[in-house]
Image 1 (spheres, protein in one colour):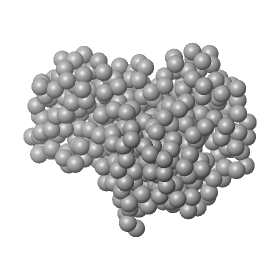
Image 2 (cartoon, protein in one colour):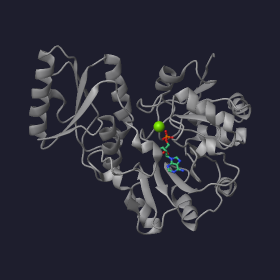
Image 3 (tube, protein in one colour):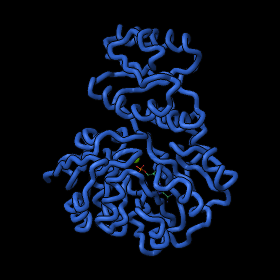
Image 4 (tube, protein in one colour):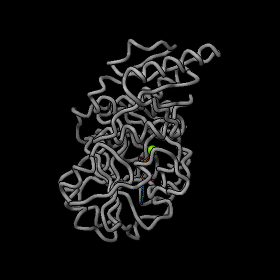
Length: 351
Ligand code: AMP
Ligand code: MG
């Protein structure tokens, strides 16, 4: 299949400029588009065939449900059987934005979209291209991240082109995304709202609106405990992973630098190509084949924005092993560490 690539500036959107993309969605085709979190691979959420195409293009396991993207709060009533009051409160505060809410699904939503679950995940993105695409198509858009399953999520159109060119109808290139990590997912079907995936909207931010919020145990776990089953089916997969083996080294700054340099020198002696994920504070202290910085350790937003792109850059450099510094898991740092731990298959060395 030929994939149409269309460049659009989010700040210069004109009415009708997404008509062709909208028509593809109406005909049950697939369009990748930017959101503020990562690029999404969109199809008609209420159509089983379109959902099937999404799973096929990504190579995504069929039990991993899709998030439905809407452009106005009224659509909630269509796709959720029951909209909890908390959903309206959270929508009022955080939508459009990087928050996904889980609620009971309505009959309109096929099990093909929810991975067989009776619940549905819903989000209203703030990216203007995404919003206009939903409105112009009149379609509730199911959109998982627009990467091949298991690869780091795409934060630029180039990443989507790399993974999905030839497999989908269109890719809208709206430039680099703003946040860089997937949305926070909060489950509103449990007694206490529960975070199933950490993201830009933190527990503290949610608690200001709805009171106590829990966090799924698998998120705070430092290892993959076979007895703990994440409530978001997608969170059980080794995800976001670069091709090389990634190890996180945690400890005080100097100890981490020394340990990573020691590991790197051993591996390079064995003939391996070694990558290091550093921060601005430590960048110049590493000796390895390929050292890249995520930015200053004090700037979590920049780290979040650059993490997936760096993992892909290392793939391109064809490194064999990667060592990364760890990050404090407070606020946005919790989402950063969650993704990094998954990318590393929970391989952490403490020094
Ligand atoms: P992605 O769109 O690639 O960011 O993945 C969507 C994430 O949302 C996956 O981790 C899914 O497991 C999760 N998800 C979607 N729908 C539900 C649901 N009904 N219940 C729990 N988790 C969900
Ligand atoms: Mg994904």
